Image: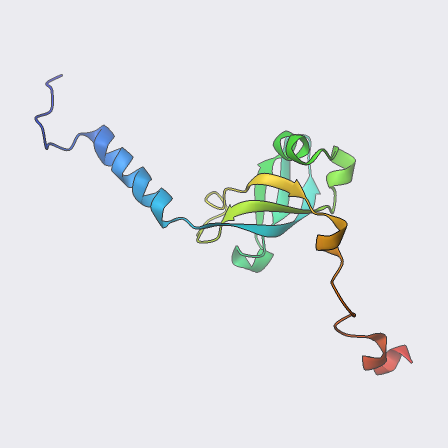
Length: 124
């Protein structure tokens, strides 16, 4: 195989350039995530910043368990947070990682209930 002259784009350099562009256009933020389904290998989570949480994102069950310290039974319905690509356009590019089990302070709203029972007439 002939060597590429300086300045020539090889297939590898084009692929590396494309990967760099994808990474630079990604924006990662920590978001709240809700576990919807747990399987032996794959767990499906709802990410509110991707498709308003309506499309479930598949993740590796053991990776989430190791990062959060939760077992498979505790994962069901768990409220977690993770860094995700908030500019993702498909469930394969959401890339949730750096998992954390949310603390009680993160789960409970600070201050009074935003909609007290007195605001609902059928609760009287």
